[in-house]
Length: 433
Ligand code: NDP
Ligand code: HSE
Image (cartoon, rainbow, N blue to C red; front, side, top):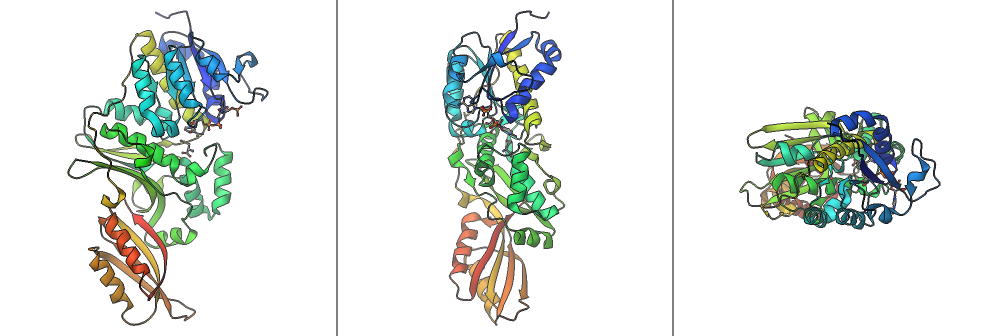
């Protein structure tokens, strides 16, 4: 039976994502009503610039007073696609107080202070859904929160930022410059309002915090995630990766420690072999592997950014939340019962690819190898090439076996102190083998 009284939706933000949410709500109104069991009505749209022309949106719905909109009391669902910490956090908690459930795409806020949001939702008996906050259109949050709720997840690894994947892909395959590729990603609506969040790894780290929290049923905040962006990845790194049969990707890796007593979460560029499925993830696409005890290895792949793909995830949540409203029920809340501590980066076991500029003279290779041995780091391969200009220097590329990150960084520190090491040209972790 279709209920005739519509469910009222307040849209906070009408930019890249919000405008697509409004468009799909209008064009698919009948299907959405049939799937939910009641029509959904756009009851108000909060923006910063009211005079901006917004195609397909009744100007009477536009307001700059987002707080008044969420306090109206007749709003069933608030869709928050403003972004940032404030006023988004206060608007969401106020929406809960005034009877609305919330759908949000705001990974920055969820990673910074998800606990406040979860607690407010629970206190007022409302839903908090956020599929769009991680990996754009890809269903990943709901599979982790619901489909895998009976399994034990041990590892989540993948590409979760479309902008940086787009930039690295363009640099690798089209020879584009870094700035040119970033401008293109911004024009396509992939980048955050401040693209520093993308290129410095904050956006991916926020997503890693969210994924680690729901995968391991514990609390992981943005500050717990080791973070390195792509601003120091050079064309030389990409060329060096190609020589090794690899490419460079910005990876988010969340792992349960082998003893099961802690977890780690990290974001950094890494070399991965071309044979690995993540190597063929191009443009702004995302892909995430989830390794669970009983399910084994699952791969999620799809568009990770952009207005329409992200709106798809928002609309999926909107349907779920509206159905819950009609059933007078709520979906899953926070599950953080394991209270596992988050370990430091030094505890992570990984491999390094290190490029050194060294003096081209007898005994240097042995000196370098000794430093690795002293730190308990085993060398996998070494490649040395004397420079053509005969300046007495050689380029030495060392790839290690797996070792704790603390031992690897200690090795690099000691190498820098050798007189015969003129410089450390690049250090990159190697993953995916
Ligand atoms: P935009 O910058 O394109 O849009 C932001 C919108 O919020 C604009 O309509 C802006 O108004 C409005 N706004 C900003 N501040 C206020 C305020 N104080 N009161 C009322 N309205 C305000 O951002 P996106 O659409 O790209 O991103 C929105 C959210 O979705 C972010 O949390 C982002 O991280 C997330 N997200 C984005 C994805 C993407 O591919 N773009 C993918 C996944 C998630 P005005 O139009 O007047 O400027
Ligand atoms: N800026 C983000 C990205 C948007 O590039 O992945 C999607 O979360």
